[in-house]
Length: 214
Ligand SMILES: C[S@@+](CC[C@H](N)C(=O)[O-])C[C@H]1O[C@@H](n2cnc3c(N)ncnc32)[C@H](O)[C@@H]1O
Image (cartoon, rainbow, N blue to C red; front, side, top):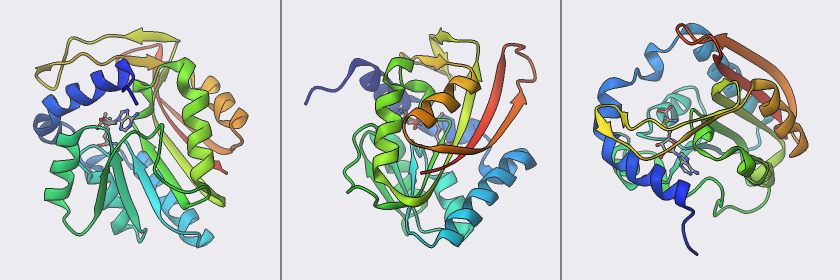
């Protein structure tokens, strides 16, 4: 099947920036305490549900996957960037990292106890989010949990030419947090918790964390 243009741009861009992404982006241990609390709450909910493995979708270099492993989850990562997957496998050889798109997961229905999508869904065009969230819902067990963390804001398309010190060709598709909630609910999720933190510099932007049940 032909790779959609937006995905090819994400793949080649993250292949290019992978090493500097690790150097420049703060690891989970250095994140703000509220974001870490959301990851901890997600881990506790999944452990309590007892329903199985957690996929970190758009796992990048695998640091958050490893953090979830440290919180007692059986976690593996999926990323479309081969370079990111290679870095993740090198850093965490005891964990499993798969190369592929989170929009077409090679997993049976109801296979997962949890899904983490941490700063990865904003690269999917907004009109494709219903399909993406339907795929998340398909692979999650009926008692499973989703944690979606990422950028939100006034609907807009951002086309940076540089990121992490390199030229990039991907786009970031911002939508308001409320619209993310609606899309998740339409895909069959029940959103149980919504945290929104203002962006420190950009008034129309925020960081959002949504916990949802399948
Ligand atoms: C900003 S990075 C975040 C990485 C990681 N979640 C973290 O917090 O360190 C976004 C990652 O999502 C991946 N990604 C974006 N869209 C994807 C898709 N449709 N399928 C798989 N990976 C995707 C990119 O390749 C990139 O590694």
